[in-house]
Length: 169
Image 1 (spheres, one colour):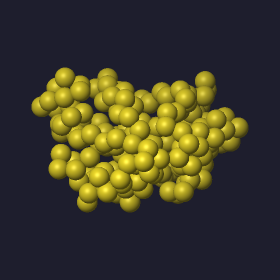
Image 2 (image 1 turned 90 degrees about the horizontal axis):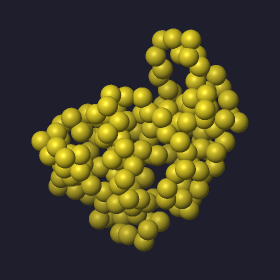
Image 3 (image 1 turned 180 degrees about the vertical axis):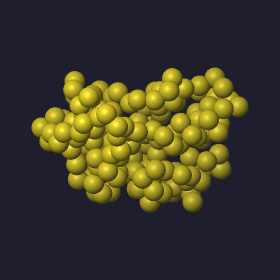
Image 4 (image 1 turned 45 degrees about the vertical axis):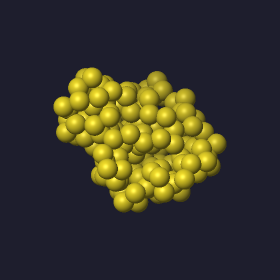
């Protein structure tokens, strides 16, 4: 049986559930309770999540733009390609799903990119909140559109940008 370690982390947007592997790499970060496959044993381990807790605190304070936590999301090769591209979106900036597909060298894969974005298991650190509609509108976010709006506003304010430019409804 595979063992993963978990902890609940308070944030300004609600409780986050972190899941880390034996080496301390983050495999999931959800706004709701983590869902795990059968055959996985979850063990509460607040000490294992301390570095993540510290980095998230600095992020929410507007002091951290890049996370140093090792990431190990599980997904298909295509999903992992999408998630790898998401971490390349600069802090405080947004792109469209179409642009994300173009960056993956497959401009027709907009829907597949959207599905992979929606299944991102690592909120905030793999910044799927930075992907918006082609017309600049906010589109789905597993944590809810209010949280997406709040994350984008936080980042815009930290870089001195006008939050209204990234928050069109």
